[in-house]
Length: 455
Ligand code: TYD
Ligand code: MG
Image 1 (cartoon, rainbow, N blue to C red):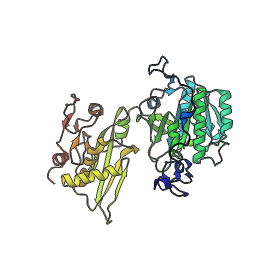
Image 2: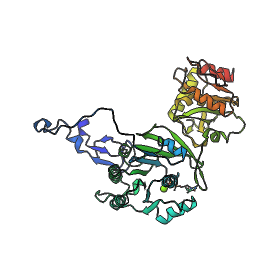
Image 3: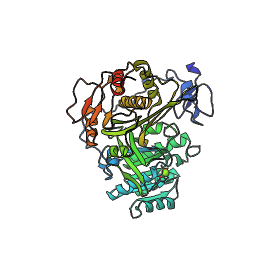
Image 4: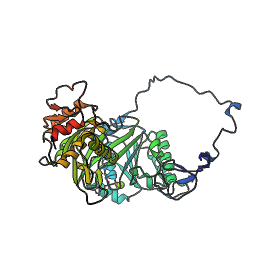
């Protein structure tokens, strides 16, 4: 019953009736706190009507004020994700798995911004100054005018920032910060929340842009409270697969630019290098066309990007066949398998299914449906698709194919990379001639029939 719920999780907000060490909803530890507000909820005891407040001034939506100034780093992949450079007095959160390259990225960015005239302070709470200096030397940045300190005491950090008055402060990481007015260990939810709040409000007041690094939990959320995401203007995720050198910087929230924009980097022996033509990179490892391999023409943010989708289908030794997916949504895979089975007569019973997006890319677009279906059927039938074709389109539960956004951009990118044909859903408005031969099946069943014939 709702009125019995007197505890809530500070990480995900779930309400429970009793305290426990671990939140059942999100799996975080030590995040359940007693929730006074819920148990005493109800109409406010004292109405505000009795005592009058002062009138606030209302304004128009129009403003004379210029947009806040931005500084570019000169690294195109970074500036685009930021929405055209770093906005003055903005607060950013950069999340990512440990070891993915956040500190490397931010040290390189710090040096670039410093070169472009910003005063930059880099505070590391995780590494000693000597360790950061070693990294700087490895990156060839030891001459950069970036100021460095190794510190976790937030009060000391704020005092220092006030005295130094930098344009940009980098805090690596928010989980190591310790605010002495909060009674819990660094890394705990309340410490992270308090530190992030102090830093963002301080930075706004002083006009300092602040970048906070946040570690990510296994589930992919920035560890600790979601509230940190609400406090900042921009949330970027730095992602990639450990075994791959590609790294993707993705904006999931941006008050100063488009969200869902990505920047692609490559981790080299000398730090991160930007990748200006990601499609070529993602396809570079593709050998001769093999069954189960399909090139998907995707869109990431505002840019088209081609990548390879691979499927493997094998008889299962288990009573419950495996469904394993890397880089795509497992639920969506189950849906495509069900549609193939019930609408096209392609059963996967008794078969293990593995699906992989090559290169460590993560795709969330439904436009990949058709490419996934093509890879699955191609793997199952052991028949390769034409090597020069790209595939995209959304599949509905009825087995119909739905057109997707930015068809023309996808086709153009495919042509640029030497593809000569595309398999896409039928569209009311014919896409402008792109030089590609279009193959537009009526529905999924017809697509399977056209490509793989009578099986
Ligand atoms: P790091 O930036 O410390 O990751 P994070 O701050 O996200 O924990 O990067 C760690 C990895 O990057 C480490 O495994 C070494 C590798 N690396 C390179 O490959 N090249 C380089 O030039 C640098 C500095 C790091
Ligand atoms: Mg680090």
